[in-house]
Amino acid sequence: MAKPKRPSASAPPTSVVTGAAGFLGSHLADLLLARGHKVIGIDNFITGSVDNIAHLGGHARFKFIQQDVTEFLFLDGPVDYVWHFASPASPVDYLEFPIQTLKVGSLGTHKALGLAKHKRARFLLASTSEIYGDPLVHPQPETYWGNVNSIGPRGCYDEAKRFAEALTVAYHRQHGVATRIVRIFNTYGPRMRQRDGRVVPAFLSQALAGEPLTVFGDGSQTRSFCYCADLIEGIYRLMMSRATEPVNIGNPAEMTVLQFAREILRITGSPSKIVFKPLPQDDPKQRRPDITRARTLLGWKPNVPLADGLRETIHYFRGRR
Image (cartoon, rainbow, N blue to C red):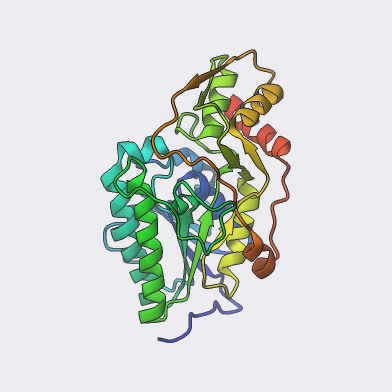
């Protein structure tokens, strides 16, 4: 197969973003437009929101198509980059839509890769730290194969992404498609849905409403939080690099969920209390990325301090109430 086309000096590169109306997909579209790309966004709104891309209405270099990416993707004209972000990504969503989650990870990835192959475009898969499951290795390097319960409640998401990675690598090896795989760790920022089940919006929504913050288990499980702007910059660098192996993008600054709950209360000034509930099945005990590859291959590391990122997110959430 021929090498991926490069945009001519006179024409902006064309990027296709699946899941463009989602939390991360919409931030990616913003960055691509800011860097001169023409962006074709695709979303079926199963978990995305038109509000996330409303500000792009009328933009000369943005086009939106409402479509399920598990269906055949046909686009006129050249495409230089395909960014496959379509998927439910929160526990609330993939527990409500397990079959759709599996379909977008398999059929949707197949269609997106097919588009990249046909257009001779470079392809990036938005994978996840969830492919490591409840890890037995800490922190998690890309060489770790994971500890995943394929038939557990989270299996629909974990295995959809693991299959998507395998399919992406197969297209690279058999068809010569230029592929990139990013494993995204816990990310937060504006445009998250307030009650999507992830810990940042859950705690912020509860704190701002004066409701008790729900901590599962004893709160000793750890997470590492990366602000969305940092993450999207790392993903952009990955697409433009020569790295074909998976690359972790996340913040290695680790804290317990209980510590995080207390930080939310401090920043918001909320009078909310903390309550404890049983730990959900297969909830990861530790989650922290080894970002050696990102540092070495991309020259990337997170820069936004947690307190600064949370202030931006809180400002967004207060405006949505």
